[in-house]
Image 1: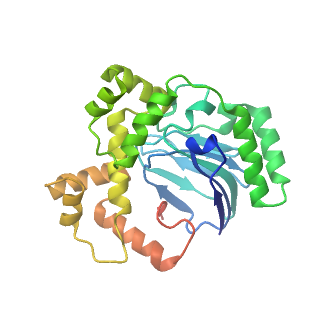
Image 2: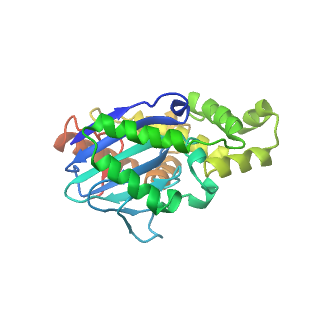
Amino acid sequence: MEYVSRVPRSPLDGLIDDLYYLEGVPPYARLTLPPMPAALLIVNLGAPFRIRAGTDIETAEYADGCVITMPTRAFEFGYPLQTRSVGVHFKPWGLAPFLQMPAAELCDRPVTVEQVWGRPAIAELRDRLATADAPHQMLTLLEEELMRRLCETAGLGLVRHRSSALAATDGAVAIRDLRVAASVSSTHLAQRFKELIGVTPKRLARTYRFTATVFAINPAEPIDLGELAGRAGYFDQAHFGHQFRAFTGLTPTRYIEIRRRFLREHPGHALDGRPLSAD
């Protein structure tokens, strides 16, 4: 599977972790993506893919691509035999300048790119991407589209600075300290976060903490779940297991089994570490 990635130029680099191109045969037909402190935009150039955003929401098909604000639950992606797309991994606050609605309206409810940018615009963009000569040219076209759509967003500086403090400490900063540093009320801070990220500061902090815990797991080595729970700040392993399952959709033991299976069956794969087999 081919995966090409690069960081965009300024000022997009303050909103985006990377632009990427993906093409090839997925490692599994169904992949689970645990919650990450990030938002996602995918412009699909191949056969439609499917997303199930939790057990209480029906699986939906996406032909032109999708937009996902920062999730609070694991999503299941169903891929065709061959997939081809370009996309954007946004920082939690980075999608806001490209949306036409509050991020909270899309929380855990993926929408098509057409619903956000309109059918004529996404059709034209897909046509230009499909005729590009190489992945890097496609990423340049996507970057130009994002630059063209970039707009001023009220409250973005506040949310970006406070979110960056959470990112730098893996969510360890007290929410009260965020409010005091910003000289705003708790209500105002929470409202801005929900408008621009889709979740409260407390939820974002929790996501950073759990993401750090999950990525600290080395499935190639023996793992002591009690020690893992302690490092994550839990004295009760059962409580940690409950929170881990709520976060990833899996128990810690099952998560480790799936990660080990991925390493065993697809060593060195471009997607290792984020999506998990749902098969």
